[in-house]
Image 1 (spheres, rainbow, N blue to C red):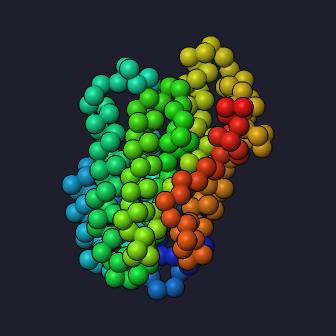
Image 2: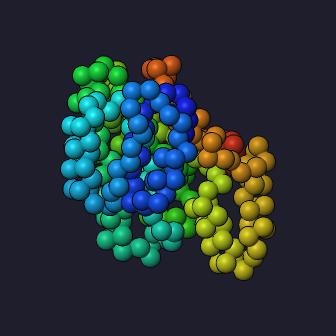
Image 3: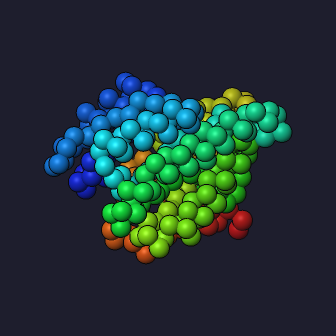
Amino acid sequence: MQLATRGARVIISGRNAEGLEKVLKELPAVDGGSHEMLLQDHADGNAMELAMDGFVAKLGAVHILVINSGGPSPGFLIDANAEDIGRAIHQHVCTAQRVVQACVSGMRGAGFGRIVAVTSTSVVTPIRGLGVSNVVRAAMGNWIRTLASELGRFSITANAVMPGATKTGRFDALIQGRASRAGSSVQVVEQETVARIPVGRIGTPEEIAAVVAFLCSPEASFVNGAIVPVDGGQLAVQNL
């Protein structure tokens, strides 16, 4: 929404047709074309690469790429199969790599590119009970930093945002799971979460989107290789 509001033509991608169509209807109209959706399961890297190649061939250069894949299932790392880790790495890192490779030539040709990954504060500190996600998010952090070092000379920046506790469906599901395991209530677990956040509340998706939109803007041309916490200050005080 933030990018469309600023005049970007948006292509949204995922495997939920109903959800994608709902988002498309909510986006404001833009000059120079309509918003579109790419119905594709990002877990299928080969199919995603082919689909992106087709979109780029049809639409021309993609100047902004926001990578925001859902996280792996919760659970302790020691209980995860190696195959679980491999699937998560493939879905997040490998598919993101394929998508970037499909778009980077057009960014170079245009002399402008923005790559932003939405990760997690577990890039810095692992989150208990999110074992596989911790591994993948850390990998995404170094993936972004490496791209930043390689692509900066082409006026292509690569950055990431690390959302903290944000009011989303996944957040609600994680809180419910923690409450169930602890034999507590959702309200108590959410209050405990808020108590660890210096601003004293849960974040909103709009606050995350605003930071992403800035990193995608021309004004952010000298921000490269940054991994920005958007967490109400939780990372800053967690070891105090």
